[in-house]
Length: 388
Image (cartoon, rainbow, N blue to C red; front, top):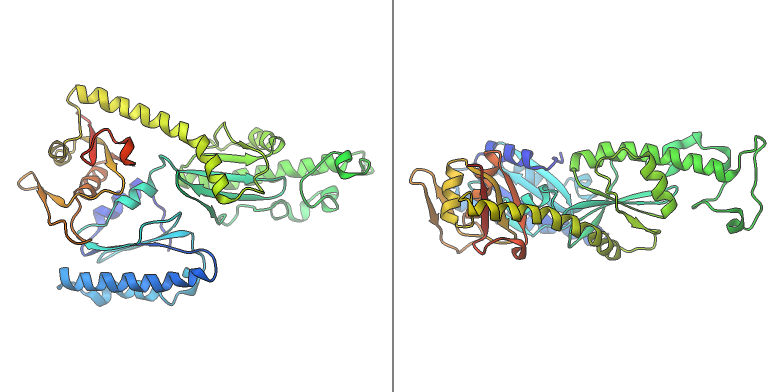
């Protein structure tokens, strides 16, 4: 099974988790033959977590714990459709499998709770987006962030092509028409051809294009936009932009798109163009959030001091927790003594205070955002806005 990832799902998984908790993150190659290395690297991660479980949780039934993970090794169908990243969370009673767009840091950790930060970055919509590359008769969908962009496999029921959407219901003009695009008679080098009823091939192709766009919009909204809640950028020629926007009912479709034919663009060029549109949206959102933080800090309702944040988490007072990306602070919360207890920094499986603060905030209904270091309001690795 491939679980759906959002903050609500994360909070549910964390609450239900029974140690030992195994967190495996594996960047996966998509192209053949490189993707054959995915299983080999997965086996290496399994060996790492097996050794850690036996050392740190000697009372655990290691054989039963690892059995569903070992079974994946020979599951050819599971490995045949990589998306760029694989996340596996396993505790005593549960298994969560997630194939995600984009890379994840290769990690194998065993602890009393799951390793959260990469999950939080993937679950939050801030800084993430989708791009619909659209021609008259074909669609491709991408998902990206500031640093990467990967093509998604369209969900079942989302028509990739005009023919897939309309099938035998194509108009006669389209069945005999141009294989790509549509143009004026001068562009085709012939006179405009008409059917007996006086409707031109050009008009028939336009009708089919609109019917395809309508079917695509409905399915894409249902299968991709609503589950992901990510903003959608439209990359298409101006004439296709106009038609798609007129018929679309997708509330996540951004008003600003990428005008021009997306066909010749490689992934990196498309990512740069998409991020140029997305970055101002992100800046506005974060600017408003950081303004709120500064205002609340002046009222004693926000802080970047870890001791204060820990106390607020213990009292369920954190509304929004900001966590610095790619940072770990060895330590944990002592609920009985109401203290932050530092840990030995050695070892990948050392408890992470930022993970624990994030976990508790999520379970209490708060929001957790992972931000780049340069966007954090302080230098401690965390900052919080309090409810009261």
